Image 1 (cartoon, rainbow, N blue to C red):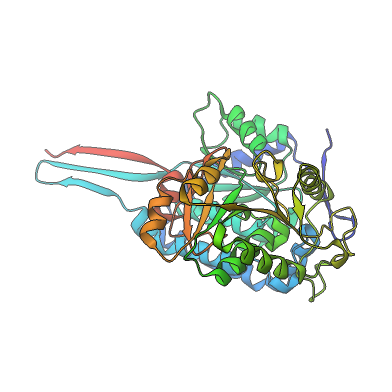
Image 2 (image 1 turned 90 degrees about the vertical axis):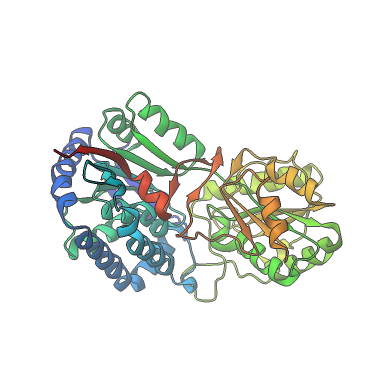
Length: 460
């Protein structure tokens, strides 16, 4: 097993950063420091913790110009899109705004005879294992509310984005969050599993693959450690006959292709009612054909490389298998000479697809989308549910009652109407089936990052 983390830049295959992995003894010492610092952190007034997190988030914003370029080097997102601070700030700010109410005791009785209430108490030390695709936004989903709730946090970031945790630690420590209360750590898989198995954490939040989620659950087995998991996705879009066609095409195709298709809640399959199918496909192909694939440091680039060549290889495999099985590829490869067979991958739209093809079943996590014709709501619902995943579904109609009725029949964590690929911090971010369990953000996010503690006080 290697003792060094290496980040290979998708831009040119060079090693961008190397960091030594902590040994088990070093990691255990870090946990001990976090546990030692947590009680005094939780004892601080809630308003103070809220303000320190707000200040830390603002300090990250001050670094944004540097961070945008670092993200391009680490995971390939074009600099023209300006990084993640908008969503990072929106999510953290919302959780700060609702913290006082969300963490307030639930008063059951305060009479002459009894005082009965339920408090929310911090778990202690929370481990956050964050992914590389939206490395700041996915991390802050848990980091901000965990700290505000009085937990100490250890952040283990993906090997593709090691600079992200360092930037967050730099910002948070600069504003006064104690170094032992928020720690950025570099841990190997075995060390992470061993720490969880040793009951090092009060709660673990993991965003990543289904296999990674299973490893987290296996490590936690028998420890009674709470585990929150956001795993794979194969999110569908469904376009009905009364949809705003232009808006549907623009939003769903952007949801499928933005960030080279590497979005947790990106659109990976689209179902269109027969009467709109041809027009939808024609418009979609025109949009995708206009993308510019290239170096993400170039301001003209609209589609950068995938984060790693092996991710692009999986998308190519799914696409070629589908074509061999009868799918039709509609985007001309001649428009994308930059496709190098490695991390730089052209976008593709497939029709004549069905659910026997992996591209319509397995998570692609890349710039390819299959589009199928459907005859009615019943067929669309059956196809949307024909998946092992359930994160979001995007419904396109002008009839809100119809959307709600369909939404009640879809096995998913979030139902969108006339929107896609967005995380609303006021709503619980959750999934079902192999997408995982638990919930982040919203009031429910605070409930998962704390435990209820009941007081039944009989007055003399």
